[in-house]
Length: 277
Image 1 (cartoon, rainbow, N blue to C red):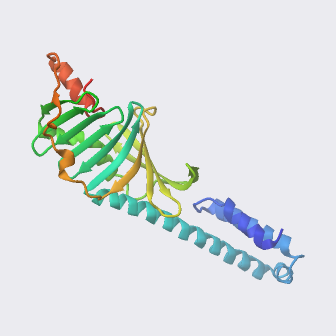
Image 2: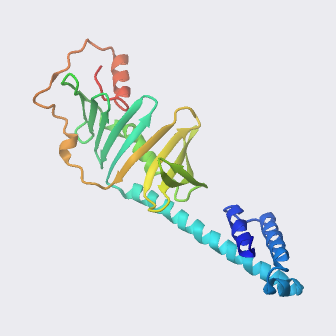
């Protein structure tokens, strides 16, 4: 193996941080590489016969390696920071929300509108400007309209708030992983909310730096892991998507009288479920 190949291997094995202990290891490794090269190249033999030049050469190589790593780190951190900035500034968002209760597509438009579509045919539309919520069951073409207090908006948009509160700088770089045939770079972030902490894993396309997915879990219930995919920023969303007037070909949903507790449960379900049944 050529000395240049040895140096490349050293770079590959290095971590994404520096420390006194690691610096010593790097210098030792570089010196060993130079030692191994002294009989294979004229330059190697010359360097190893001169102690001062020997140490200086190792230091130069170390600085070059650290510089390369810092450039790579800055590039990765910039990509993450730019993604967070896009999320915070976006006026509209669409994404697919994967949960243990099923998957659904979310449409969000600042400052008042949210629409959720479930694969089973349920749709929930919220308009916080007028305080109305419309439930549609596309399988049986029935609807239900409910009024609610607009102060409930704080809780209803919690998942959007979580995204917009992602930290500016990732806590940890998770490296590169291959998912669905794509190379992705991962970043770990945390957001403390009350007595528990939300943990985010943000995955960007390694080449394009586009946001691919966000994995979310909480320390309160680590098994409740949710994944967000198909994320789009600032695309045009027509107001008709958030119309709370029932379609003309739908009939009112006929339901039994609910107790106050059942009504609260129905309101809770609407945040993750759009169906009426």
